[in-house]
Amino acid sequence: MNSLLELRHLDKRFGVIHVTRDVSFQLAPGDRLALIGPNGAGKTTLVNQISGVLPADSGEIWLRGENVSRLGQAQRVRAGLARTFQITTLAPHFPVQRQIELALFEREGLGGSFWRSIDSFPALKAEAHALLGRFGLRSQAATPTQDLAYGEQRLIEMALAMALRPKVLLLDEPMAGVPKGDGARLLAALDALPRDLAVLIIEHDMDLVFRFASRILVLAEGAVLADGTPDEIRRDPKVRAAYLGN
Image 1 (tube, rainbow, N blue to C red):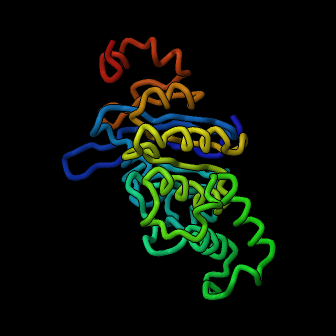
Image 2 (image 1 turned 60 degrees about the vertical axis):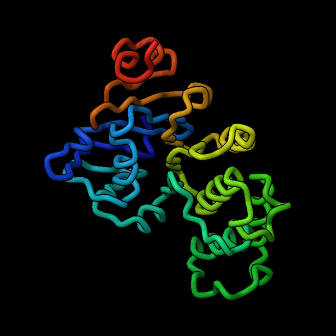
């Protein structure tokens, strides 16, 4: 497999609690992998290890052929990894467009120029405009994020992640807290992600999981219980007993 992301025997403990156990899998360009499992299975802990929020106790994380196990979050972002969080982490008083511009400035190493107008950087201005359009946010460009619906805030998070031009995107429960009526825009945004982007999504909405994922990995008590296509996972008796039910 031409993998973009590879986990090799990842392990993590918090005291006597074994949170992730010998987790190994790979992501190739274009993969749409859903990570599912009961509450407490270790899903968010695993994503925190991949993104560098938490160090692994043992095992390795490889990103685009480089061992990033000892690199920090910012270094992993520069290597091609981006993520969203289970709870939004947006600046509440900043307009949508300005937040996207700042993400582009940071990506280009222009963090010290945050006070300058985007007009000074025509290529970045065009990219910010394109991102606003891709996620249906142009009409909210001047609106502070605190004044937007929660579903729109989720779209902004995805736009900020894509501003980093990732090769691997980690989405931690993008539908969490989003009213059913706002879900269609998020689903459309997920469907419109670049086809060569590798996506790992944690999600409890099984309708979304089976609609979006080309592959599903089931975590139970920190270990990989099953890894296969949606049809294989749906029929797996171990998964039905541990998580999906009848």
